Image (tube, rainbow, N blue to C red; front, side):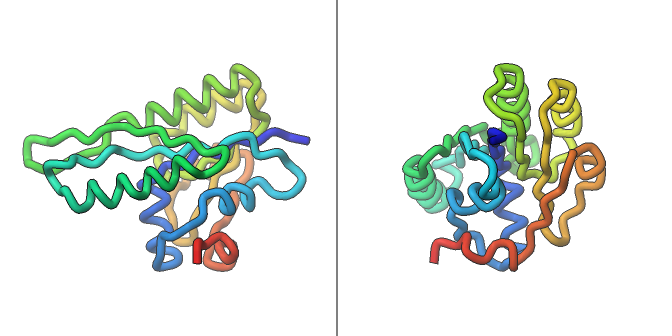
Length: 174
């Protein structure tokens, strides 16, 4: 039985869920199990995002803390957080998320923790890590939401898993 790890870019997932299904109240455990399928073993799911700035938006920060607390109770799921950095124009940008995904995918591949990585991200910056994971004789599957554009990652992945509203049925919290 092949061992699978799922790597989720949280911001990418959130925006694609909103665009694809008009909602984002996904049950991450059910979603990861559905991606894995019945004939493979789901080892762990990693969820990546940034810690919101409490001073900048206390309400959003409180909502995120509630969400992260709930996520930390999800079996076999680990939350990994990057940071936000204020740009000179006053807006905020994500920092460290892509690096965390890349490091985890590579280190866990090199240690033999999985046979198949399922990547939930359309970020082209991850193209090289997908290449390197494949060089370690691991398979990489890319989750592609309907309407999502990630041509180069799709070309590099061993397989693409098309996700639309029909795929997501049975994965919602309510």
